[in-house]
Image 1 (cartoon, one colour):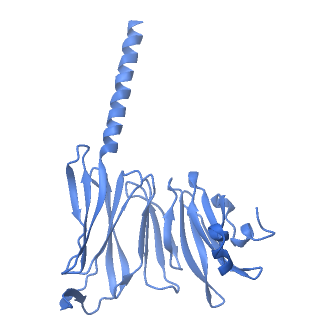
Image 2 (cartoon, one colour):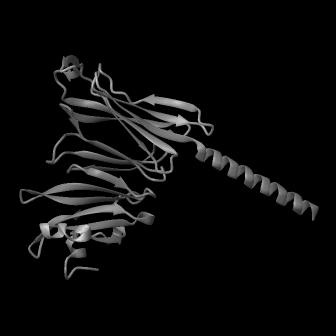
Length: 299
């Protein structure tokens, strides 16, 4: 009996230690601080800050834009606060500065070309878990990249293209885990935008457009991360004399929330604008969104 009591006592102590460690882990914080703009130099100022459980700053990374070099920075933090994604696009070209109406402006020749797209993944203690560098096409001040981190922080989605515009542009969609391992990589021919990922990191969604008979039509792109399968859904059209467009979001357990939105002045007066919504799985995705929502096709 004594041995059993001792065993139970040790188990309780072990559980309490685990709970204390878990609570302490949650108390580490990541914050993105936006400090506005320097009105003289016309550049954004800010920082990415990592805090210990007692509120002390562990690490601080400047997000200030340089006045000596054109560069772009972005930060994404997972919903659970465990991870942060720090992204930089760093054109290689030399820039010259001049003053215009008391503001410092960037000018330079040959701003088009390839630029490093550098990604750094941190945990909430400020430790670098991995770092990757890709090459993105840069045209003047324009480039096309996007990055998303799942709510649980376990999946990172990166997208970068080899050109800028709405016409056919080769792009690369990559999903990585917390160790920086590529789970899946997809090459695309049409630009992707408004990229999102389900909270559990199982489904990636994006808006895109496809050229149909010389007209660019809105479509929705989806990727099943675990299998690598993709589906494209037509999300724009006209039915029964009315135009409509579609959108997407995510629900629990990797399910997809699809929206059907009618377009017209009469819908502006209706609460919710006549919008309809359905929650379905990846396998249930149709080729055309209207087959789910229009009369005769509702399910």
